Image (cartoon, rainbow, N blue to C red; front, side, top):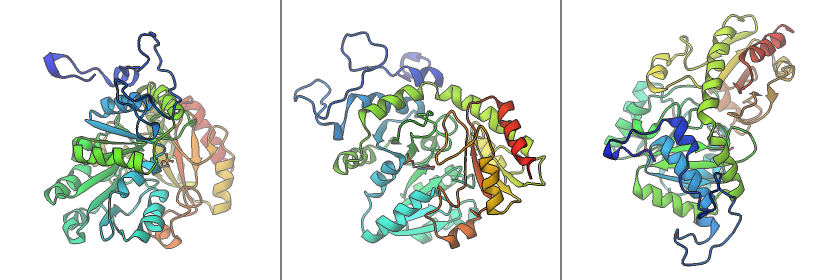
Length: 388
Ligand SMILES: Cc1ncc(COP(=O)(O)O)c(C=O)c1O
């Protein structure tokens, strides 16, 4: 799949998301692969499956699709996005330094701070939207650089190529957590990243009914490390979740199209409601501080919108709970719209001082725009706003 040889045109992303190639179901003719619910495999099988902790046909099928949409050489799937974070971080050793963008997903920060620091990992943070900090990477002497773009929940857009160019000169590996965009919106490896990480729980699956993660790379050594982490740390997904995510990813391009169109429209519309919404943050909104970069780096602005409200904590929750089509819930990227209060939910584990410095306060809410009709979503938000 995706073969450029013999002048064969590379299929489009909608085709690649649906055609997964081998189903590992021999000559049954099944169109959808079965769920290979087995912990172990008889030795001597042609695909060298051994034990599900280190590989399973359902993992392989999902990995093949993710590789083809990202156009990467390798992919390893994990039990969650956080398992993928664990897989990468556990390759480091005591004394190594990880240089992070200052705004990352709260549970990634919690893992670095509460788990890996105990084992001697040094964790440093910098604001990568400041160009001077990109030039100063060498001063930190990092072993690994950890980015998200757009970041969770502030939707800062980082210049992935500029950061990777600097890091590559210094031979420092760069991880980009691409959960908010997926390969359909931006391809970190093409921009120079060593590893592209995605929580497949979110957009890739899209139906909020399974957990998963994946790491994609073109680097053979890193690929071996990921396979080793998967089996040695027991970070593998279940065959059933992999099967569900394989089913979900087939509609990823269609969902992203719909969700993005709605998000662009809603973000523009909400600019007209300054009385309650003091700030609309959306990468393709002209007022976004990295608007030009976002336009050049991303195919669309995605479907996450962050709002700063002129409301206190109590009223912010009242607003969240009075929405009909947006459930107040953790997570994002599903067909159903969600609203989240990062300060007390996704970033609850980040210390108060850091949250205040970053601006993740009680008046900040994050919307994940789903696949409902755009009109219904905007009417829902406007109706809730009119209560204040
Ligand atoms: C940017 C980002 N990375 C990683 C994760 C972790 O993914 P999971 O919940 O699948 O472990 C999340 C979860 O919200 C996330 O938002």
